[in-house]
Image (cartoon, each protein chain N blue to C red):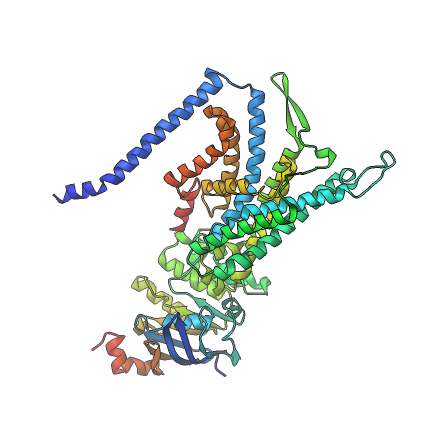
Length: 237
Length: 368
């Protein structure tokens, strides 16, 4: 059974038909990437899975369980965490408070210290800044915080929306290394990226999204070689 | 050429700033002169009178602070002004009033006094009951107010819930008018808490009364404010409230039930307003269907004064406003009837010159 399976999702913003029948699958332990141009519906897909948007039609299944009708906060309790676009850290709260909110859905509070330690091992920078107000962190640190916060929920599947956005190239690389490390520890990842080359280099499989529809799905290696992908998303003639 | 153009473009801003500075200096000079005149030049009042003013200001300020928190909490989360908040306070005041009325009619004869009533026999229990009931009815009203008047309009333009709030305020006042009548009712306290009695403090040869009701109001209000601060800063629900205030959809992604947090925010602000209502009744002695209107607007002023959305700001603004209202007319040499004009004059000045309020700057710095 797939970790995540979505079937023929149609999502609207008012009367605008944003997702026109998207179906995709993410298997347990995989990194799957969703690439596409601005406005193709990548973020909308993630927000629909997370329950922030309600599809008019279609199903979202988490290990076979239908979570389509659940509210966003209930989806979190099922084991879906999301790192939102633009990081979405709580700027007026401290780093620790942000991480604490990441574990909001956890009922096993006794493991909190251990999870915090795990996040600090992955992101030693956050440990140094524990007491600092999150809004004063640099862009890269904020991205680390957003990722660390999502790990505090110990999700079964992690949805990441543009983790590389607005970061210096050197930071992008370290963020992607971390994504791979998180995946190796057993978290399934659905990654949305503009930086298609980077995304395809760490993902097992990829979906190409165009104006609300999946136009291509293949292994990451094949997608990298694909004529259309190379032209449109990798900028290689 | 280009340089002059830039300079010209920035001129109006500089002029505006200059006017602000000049007005500020003139106003400050006037206030300093008034301080000098009132205290040293032509002392109009003795220390005893100043003390009475100060006591009344601090007590009133602590009530304003409690109500102001409600405005600020709701604004922080929904970015709307809950104009029905003063009427929630009125409901709390009636809650306390009816508790005292009921207890007044329960006989509790003692050996010494066969006509003793529960209210006077057990004043502490009576006061606790009045606060508990006042806070509960106000909290419940706050909960339903949000559910009925604001929740259906969650995604409407910002002006719409504001109009709904004004409608809710009119509705609550008229419901109270219908239920309780239009007469001003005398809030009868336990005899130990009779208004006007208190500790006598000798000042300047006369005695100043430090009223029991005032001390009760002040102490209780400070305790509630501390409890609220701890709730918001230290607890899970407080963290959830702050997260929702910053970003609702990200908060939902943390597993926070945003609607639940909004409901709880209204329950908490309702309870605070209810406590303020009972204090208002106990200390000032009158309840009627519009009793929440003026303190409601004053507390709104206090919340804006402190920086709306900012909790310590609301506490500070409430205290500040109460004290200004009590001391201001005397210091500025205005008739005391103008104290409301003074309070609302401050609101206008704040809105023009410092819309972010006293603590607003801190907030905006942190936001960056």
